[in-house]
Amino acid sequence: MGLLDGKKALIFGVANDHSIAWGIARALHEAGAEIGFSSVESLIDKRVRPLAESIGSTFVEPCDVQSDADIARVFARWGETHDRVDILVHVVGGSDAPPRATDTLGAGASGASPQAGRWTGTGSPGRCVFARHNPARRLPELLASQLL
Image (cartoon, rainbow, N blue to C red; front, side):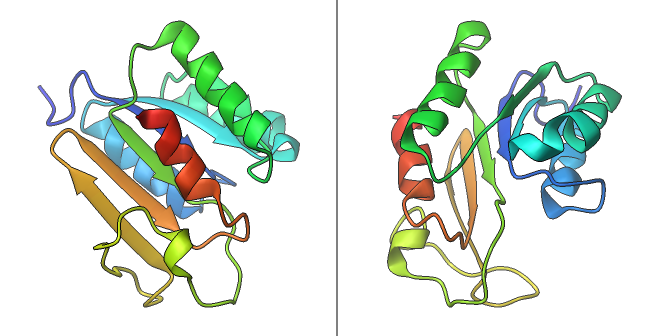
């Protein structure tokens, strides 16, 4: 029995088998969570789907994170087969610009990464959300709104 047995995780941003998002996905899977993936469309068939299949995941959806409608579509598709999201991981491409307050989920989030100031994390019992600075300013806000 794993620590995350029965938990459902949706991960945005797997690019390849060396990406931070893939490392998080593997760790969550090893702890018992069911994993779904969303990434940029150009990476889905070549990189993301084979990784998802390697851990038994069947939910793989493309998403343009700069499109509110696309984000909503991914959550609607998730909702067709899942009753909830327990864990949301957002590790979508960053930039060299410093993070802004609007790029974090939760005002009290603290930095925690080798690249100080590039990651923020916040969570509550039963739900953990990681957000990485993203050029799509509203993405963390939009993802959070889909969970409420």
